[in-house]
Length: 400
Image (cartoon, helix red, strand yellow):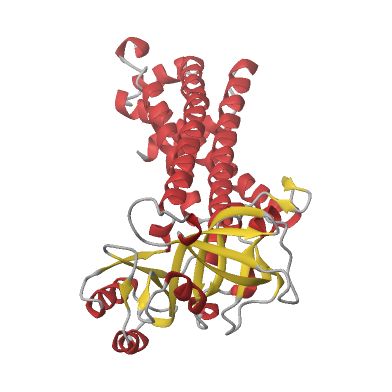
């Protein structure tokens, strides 16, 4: 093996007997470098894009969210609150009462969701990170904070007085069509004191209010909630916390983490990442089979040397290993160089914003260890297979 490896290094770093062979080798090596660099750039780009997309969910979605296993609401007693407050791993929790409502302001209407939150909500979700104008909710049950999209659609600004009120309607429960439509809805009025912004979808979906206002609107008892949102301690064991929650609520609830709350988004991003990886890998396979062509041309160029090695006692397997090692070395060195160039480009993108999405927003990227590992093994394995196929061309007929 040492003999084959030594000869392979000599062949790799020494020029061939013709310029055509040298050009083909350079093209093959360049293909390896570009393939590795392109694959690393794609993986780093998608890692950054995934972080950029998911950062909005971290503003709005809690670490854990508790749902009723059936129906819209479940009971949350004082005893359960005490147990939850003492549960290891839980930093804060907030009671949520949520329902679909109809909004009317200054002659304009819109369907939306009202999310009633308690005074502890700002400890679970950093409301100062999403609030863009005005103030957050106080203990006043006649205040709301609207999404930026809802505020625009209703032409509703932040009001300083209680002269311009938002009307909030919710259908009364029951069956059949009521004889008096005016009595088919419960309604409350509130003033908009702030505007929040997370993303376009959420900005058009929710208004925030106090749990007092929403319970009054829905005529819910004080111990009824639709959800409970929790913030965990940094060192909390998520699985242990979930098991503790199930024991507190007698296994009558469903608990979801942030990934499960955004499973569609995670699946979409992972699918896009996989498809892009496969496409770039296919391109890399085409480029890396230039290595096979270069090795075959090198075998032809070194045909007389191969015969000499065979005549002085070298076996066919050891001669095949010479060209297998040559192609593998070319692939490994090209991959390392491609990773280095890709790393430099990503660092420059992060520092100087070479590619911009908007004039103020550079394309997000993130360098991860897994990107280096995936690129290195993908390119080197393909290069090894290409070299193996090329070196198998050496047979008894060639050396006779």
